[in-house]
Amino acid sequence: MVITINSLEIENVKRIKAVKVEPSSSGLTIIGGDNGQGKTSVLDAIAWALGGNRYKPSQAQRDGAMASPALKLTLSNGLVVERKGKNSALKVIDPNGQKAGQQLLDSFVEELAINLPKFMDSSPKEKADILLQIIGVGDQLFQLETQEKTIYNNRHAVGVIADQKEKYAKEQPFYEDAPKELISLSELILQQQEVLARNGENERKRQNLAGIQQSYNLKNDEVNQLRARLAEAEQQLQQLSSDLAIAQNSVVNLQDESTAEIEQNIANIEQINLKVRANLSKEKAEEDAKAQRREYKDLTEKLEAVRKEKQELLTTADLPLPGLSVVEGELVYNGQRWDNMSGSEQLMVSTAIVRKLKPECGFVLIDKLEQMDQKSLQLFGAWLESEGLQAIATRVSRGDECSIIIEDGYSVENESYQPVVPQAPKTWEGTLF
Picture 1 (tube, one colour):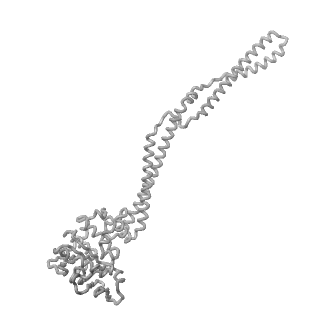
Picture 2 (spheres, rainbow, N blue to C red; picture 1 turned 45 degrees about the vertical axis):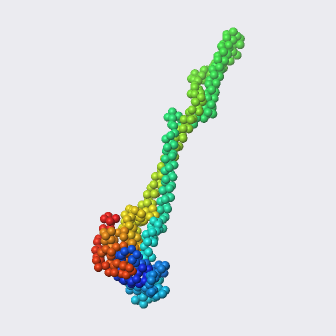
Picture 3 (cartoon, rainbow, N blue to C red; picture 1 turned 90 degrees about the horizontal axis):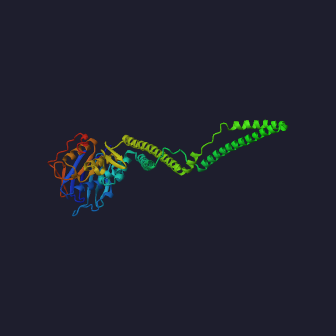
């Protein structure tokens, strides 16, 4: 059940002498008048009546008044709220006969409805927290935003390192003619020694051949000279002939290897290895950069996934106003943060959120409505009508938009008052805001 204010009677509160108001059941009721006449005192009195002694003005009794403050509010649910007498004691009359008091009022009166500046003057984060509390996604959104921030910071750090490594890799020289791996001096010397050893063995075989040839010749001469020793010499000759054949066969295809290339590599080993190291450094830098880019891409995908989940969470939430959302911990309405909203937009967002906090509280008090022009007032009133919401507001004006005028603490019916003609709520989007 939505509860609104049917009527209010106030005497001797702050600047008020005697005021009686019967606000519209829905829409905008404006209390007009010049400065210092008691308009704001009306709202303060309502807040005191419904909100309890914490809203009692520091000087509740009007200066010069002989009688104590007296308040009487009749609500749409039949409750009658009174404060009167020396102590301004609270009396709540329940037509159903149930026990009544401040606890009953607190059950349906939203604090921000009677103290809207408390919401409007709060920090951007506090406003967003109230909205998230209403729609029940505060904890989830906090976790997602924490996750988003962590991934974003990690991705940024990885991206910086990737940029540095790519720049470093590009600055490294590269030598096409250098081998893939570093050259070892000890291995080159070992290769040289092996070649020299093989060449030495070839030389030994050549010398062996020459020796055998000489022996063969001597023996052949000796055979010719010493026929007597022919048998022994022929035997030796046969053996030498066999050895000679073996030796000749072993050197037929012998070819000495050149050590020139090895010697050149030994001479240039430092220059070659410098090139190899440079190439290896460049390859490693390029691989490091690629790895960082892959990690950056993975973090980007995770970041987008978290942001999408956040958007879906808020899209499916039961928000109090179309176009209202929370971005980076702040309220956003139609793409604008609080400090970029017009005064009218701020007021409408605040009223919608207050209504959502306690839906049975069907009224809100608004002070100093001078920020709105006539068209804005009509649009705001139409929106209140469409929401079935009652707003009691003050405005420094004596125009026909004011239902009553406060003059020197008294309420005066405004004879030129013209009720706001309801318009389609959609005019709040685009035309005004």
